[in-house]
Length: 190
Image 1 (cartoon, rainbow, N blue to C red):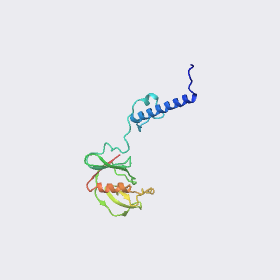
Image 2: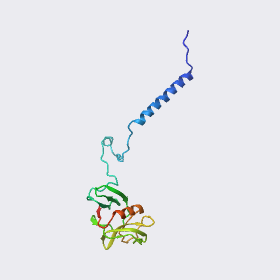
Image 3: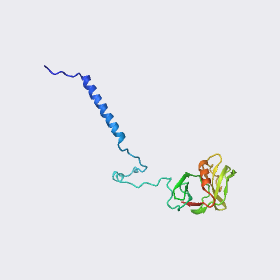
Image 4: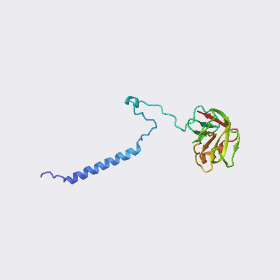
């Protein structure tokens, strides 16, 4: 008796079912395997393939505490990053946030929180501010952290205006106010 041939639809159905089963098995295995991790560092467009293959040191993330900022409980203010860190006694950053500086920057160095003023007042830029934490003076201008009552960033200062307010957003300003008791060190770094 001659061998019977399977119809072509049976072959197609069998192969399709087998392929679907194989893909399902591979998908299950893939969910249990290692996953690639994206990194912030990437080779520059002009880098050669050989250079790109070698590991490159990554830059410090913008939120890393500056290494030259001292030790112990302190406020760190970076002039180049326009950023503040609140550092606890164990040298751990409790909070970090961007700030908007005035037109007069304090010189790099160590200061201490002096006067604090909680009531709402008008800043030198005409904006209603609160939670003012004074820590330095330069060229006859007091330098202090504060936040706008309405939470806004400061408008650009008119040319020639001298302002010493370092503005924060409202939640960060409230956290800074709570942290910055009188006598708290303020380390200003480049």
